[in-house]
Image (cartoon, rainbow, N blue to C red; front, side):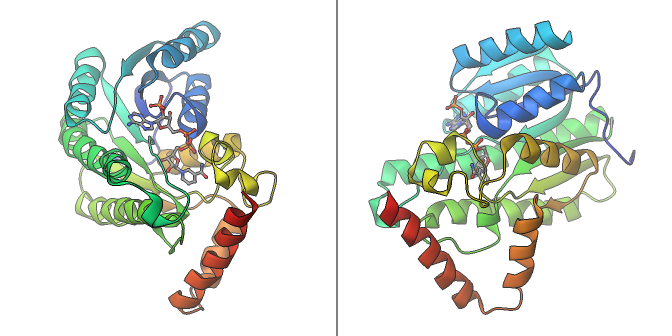
Amino acid sequence: MKNHMEFSGRWVLVTGASSGLGEEMARQLARQRANLILVARRGARLNTIKSELEQAHGIQCHVIPADLSSPADVDRVHAEAIARADVYAVILNAGVTHFGPHLDLDWAGFQNMLATNVTSVVRLVNLFCPYLIRQNQSGGLLLVSSMAGLLPVPYQAAYAGTKAFITNFSQSLSQELIGENLSITVFSPGGIDTAMTQGSKLRHFENTVFLQDVKSCAADGLAALRARKPLFVPGRLNRTQLFATRFAPRSLVASIARSAYRRVLDKA
Ligand SMILES: NC(=O)c1ccc[n+]([C@@H]2O[C@H](COP(=O)([O-])OP(=O)(O)OC[C@H]3O[C@@H](n4cnc5c(N)ncnc54)[C@H](OP(=O)(O)O)[C@@H]3O)[C@@H](O)[C@H]2O)c1
């Protein structure tokens, strides 16, 4: 397998490309002259981004409006993508959270989170891995997880569970795929300054050191994919925090996180 991925002139599929981290990764890939397949529910927003990026960078974009909580839409994304382009890399970034007491999350909300954050990701991995292996171009997948997949996060309990699944799934699968012409990277940011944090009670972290700016986070994610890292946590502060948690009992880590998030919820 080639050591590093090169995106110029290649087709990269990005889910959740209509805002936040996914949109920013799409913008940075366009600057690197990658062609893009943009996936999210807001088709009109994706078409605006497509026009802007095609004009600015002379690349090609396809838009696939899709609700990834629907299994039929997930399968359609794969079918349409490979019918329209020679896909080289897949960034599975779309995701939703619930910040607040777990018992306030209704069942439909939980099912939507599980379908979007977990089921759609596994399904797309199952569909794209054999395809990328057949293509034999040393392609790669980036699964966007979170620090919440590495640590307990009270008040984002279900979200932390979905991201723990993605982190373990990806790290396990990347070992199974050693020897194949394909890499899989799991990317685990801490808080990022995006709509996910701005539009919720999490915005009370805004302008604090806890939120990484979306541009640097997207650049870190793409660098990890390019370098085929099995797992990457961006930001020195996040990595230091993670390192420190190795020396403390997990119950203490959970209790410190509980106090920090409780304070944020109380401010909201
Ligand atoms: N923000 C943070 O602090 C943070 C930290 C660590 C990890 N992350 C992860 O980073 C990823 C991107 O989040 P973000 O911060 O950029 O949030 P965001 O700005 O809210 O973006 C979420 C993206 O996911 C798409 N999406 C949500 N539900 C979807 C569905 N059912 N079908 C298709 N697309 C769907 C949204 O598009 P539509 O609404 O148009 O469908 C949007 O493009 C997520 O996986 C998140 O868990 C975020």
